[in-house]
Length: 66
Image (tube, rainbow, N blue to C red; front, side):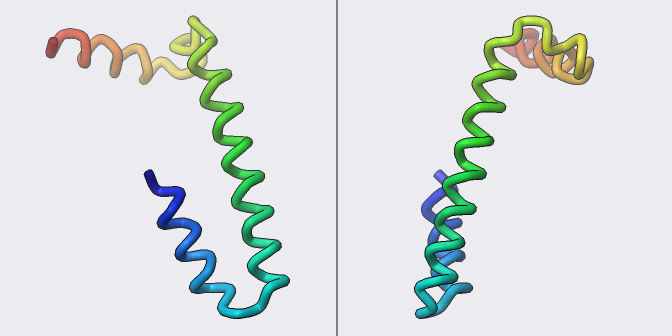
């Protein structure tokens, strides 16, 4: 959802300098890939709450609301 907004911000900051646009798009794509890999890794690890106990608390409270 926010990817489009980030790209617009990047274009506004870069102006008409194509080198800045290219570098910004490269960094944007890199961080999107990092986010996707970390998100998939975190979602596939079933004992993530052992590393971050707050996640277990959040899970319990969200399941109690249902």
